[in-house]
Image (cartoon, rainbow, N blue to C red; front, side):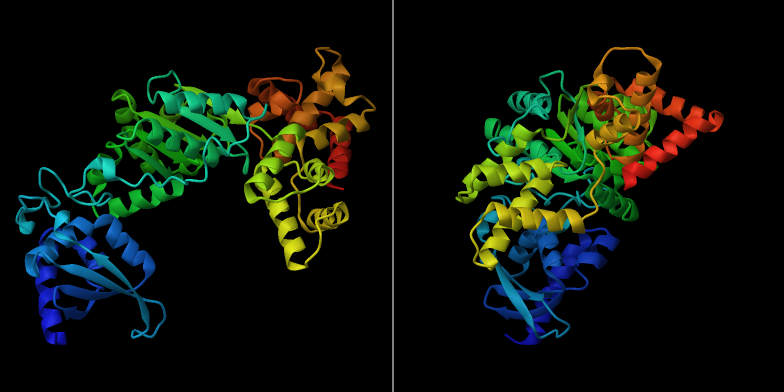
Length: 475
């Protein structure tokens, strides 16, 4: 087929597509496409990148299918040529067949599809014409409950998540707010809930979305004047999983639109699962009305895994990978890598890689050498345990007394100082700090920090003690 005929066919397709899209969407996603070839019923088009191709497939598949069926015929196929370099003639091809079963039995005239401004606006965030059950949940199939190691650090959150998965929006855990530091398993647990819901209730529409992606989608919708379409899409979801909600801080427009979506879903008995690096009470830059809704259900925290849990995580990882490692080596890793699950698994992977690449046996000496290098070359976050030890050593007292119920002034003050440094030198939430230091609540930690700040300004000797402790912590 000649290039001329190819261009004529694509021009007819573009005319139909343009009639059914907002101008900005058409110029962004269809104007850059170049028709390449037409052989029989197969049209080949060139797109600028893999992302471009994936976006077309995700958002405009049905529109393009109907258009091609109308212009070329019921046997129309579409082939993409994806540019992989600056040379426009260099590219890889992805063939996407669009048989007649993509088209409804009573196929409407494509030019009469709903468009922006009509009573039923075209939704730019879902594939046009598809039922909502066909929305991709964007869940990681590896993040299951089976792969999630339970321990004292996550037992409440895991139990609540499993209850939600068995009865979405039917428990008092709505929303379920999961919070904790980086690498402690928030994303894994949230995904596990979504996967379990899909297993128990295949007809439920589940969607996992990162807060940053939500922000990007909202800004794009605002630029395209498609804000209502954006809201309508999220109101279709039965179980919405929003990861890292702390990124909404100081984003007033995004908070406003999420407030609307949250209210609609909650009122219509839909389940919300939110994750954050801080408890709702510790989130700054959030509207109070949104924070109050975060507190409606259950806020469950994830803490640093204890030694026994770290051992189980390592054993689960080695078993899954089919590798045998001596118990003493696993114990050594678990004793020296304590911050989070991600670092723990990363250390094990590094050890396996080093042994494989250098053709060495995995020994305790190899593990010690590798971990020593990691510790030496990595700036580790100061832990709450370490802060308590330094503070107690400075005041010549046992760490255990910080957890006692005594009201002796020197012990109370040492506890307050430990809380103060934990708040300023770690990423832990106030609730996590209070739980680790004396099993106190977040309000006690807040009070301790205020007391220490006041004493810094009024008590010179106290400030000198604080400066000396800080020096020791940074040594």
